[in-house]
Image (cartoon, rainbow, N blue to C red; front, side):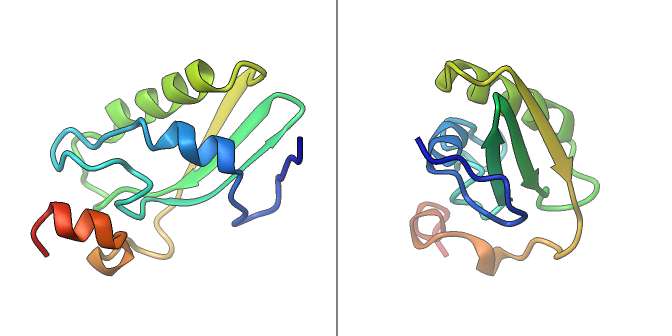
Length: 106
């Protein structure tokens, strides 16, 4: 199994786990919303680099808990999850996937 830990890389297994995390306000998973900027996994440590739709997001704490739970549930060899919450680049609606845009009527 190939593992990646490079900045801005995307580990397919981590991305699939994160698709289980649905923003409770928008009803769209955080990957399709464009909130995930990078992922990696090395020796059981999963790293997620992500943002929120706004720095004042009231769901920040809940989403972070959901990220931890989804990764640990979906990837048996994951022993811990580190989430770096970043604000640069700032999130924009253009970062959403076409599926998310369609789901939200954009």
